[in-house]
Image 1 (spheres, rainbow over the protein chains, first blue to last red):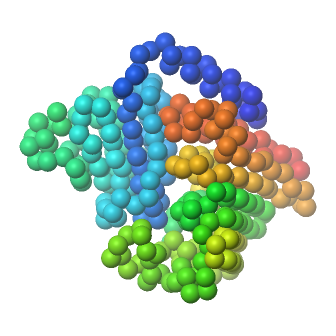
Image 2 (image 1 turned 90 degrees about the vertical axis):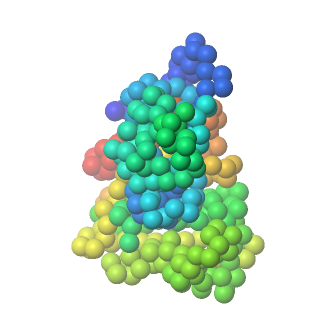
Image 3 (image 1 turned 120 degrees about the horizontal axis):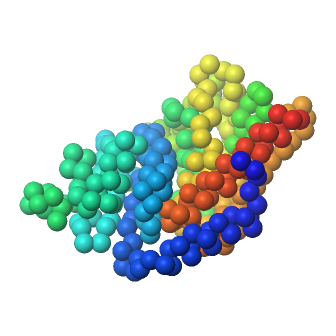
Length: 133
Length: 189
């Protein structure tokens, strides 16, 4: 890979933006928030962040924001993440290693179903019974 | 102990972000035998007592976690430097900012691996907030130093944002290209 200049980076971003402008994505922004406190870092949250970004790219998903926050208070199930998808309850997942991240991208972001084994906070039992709908 | 030097770097810089800094300057330099990280911020700083508490694993700062009795970030770093023949120094002035420097000896058997620097720089550059972050990365070989610099405000201006997956994947490509070029320069030196 040749050393990229800032101008080349700007041109690549413009191309991506033009592709996005062709699609109607208003109000469909999905968010993945990754807990990156000392506990999360120690449990591999950075690898989880990398896995989300790689998988989102491989599935050609657009308009997903991936942000970081500090400890969510669930240190015993790190890495923890929150997923916010319009039309679904906000969910905090725990023990999210890169393989689980792949599942969350496929099931939650694409198929709009929760990955029940890793839900650690937010949805009530009746919502879980309906698969998060 | 963290699993990689990059995990320590994440922890150090996040402390600076959480100190209410408007700018954080990070130096990540390396030669054949040692790896040195410095993170200097202009955040709230600490007085003598707070500085001592920050290095105590059985103390956690107020506000982050009520009722928690441990704070492991800085103690992890100091312990790792101490047990692997490296060094650790923290300087702080209340109201002015804090500077942390850590040197780790790469050949010591207990020193963790460096880890993925490009991913770590991306994670730091995309941390929420408007704090400026400047990362100076350098490699020294036979007295010749090569390096590159990443400036958060500049990258945000080029990419438009630092939170969408599209921007973050391009950012990783950009940093990887800088790092690979640096490694090639180093081998050619």
